Length: 262
Image (cartoon, rainbow, N blue to C red; front, side, top):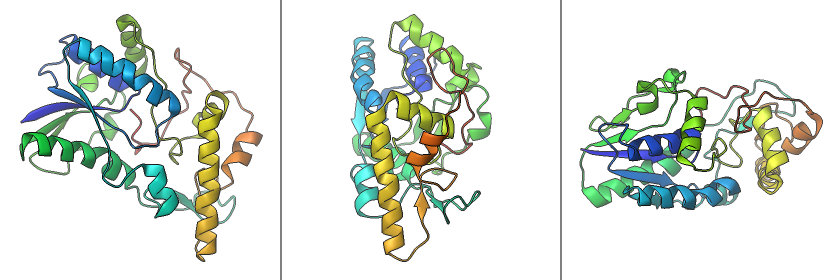
């Protein structure tokens, strides 16, 4: 059995990395694996080398892997929609969502493929960085010989606890991790993306327009990145709201049960 830490680049997984390095998690992860979807926020890409360097200084192996399908945004632009886009006419609240394949194909499978190629067809235990209060997201591994583990929940650590652990280690507190154009973001996080990382937000806007135009040209229902089923640029431009934030400057508006933010 190989135990690994599934690293997403957000506060919980950085805190879990630190706790492993400090010997606060037993058994300790043998390896830290970051599955780069190719569509991460620019700030996430900038911070990964800091966490990797710190982990290696602490004697932990940190590796990166990617899907054999290539970057997620390229696949979405050139082939099909593996992310859960909203379907329906403009402004049609509560429309259906497409099937979510992104977490499986760009995160879980690339990590498992890397580990099996390296260690053989052994059982895997994944340390997943969900925090106290997210127990409703806990799921058994889809493969019987593999198991999932949630050390932060075991220790009853909250999102704010994770921020404090990162500060104690002297590392940069990252934003909550998510792909640039993840449809499971709420209006608060979309607005934050637009204000703090406008280049990333523009990439999401461009993708929003692209997938919708392609669907319409193919005689299909319009597709949308925002749950309101309106153009992303117009939603964020008109929704001038204030949202509660935590000490790291992150929006605290609740996110969906099924997301893969870590």
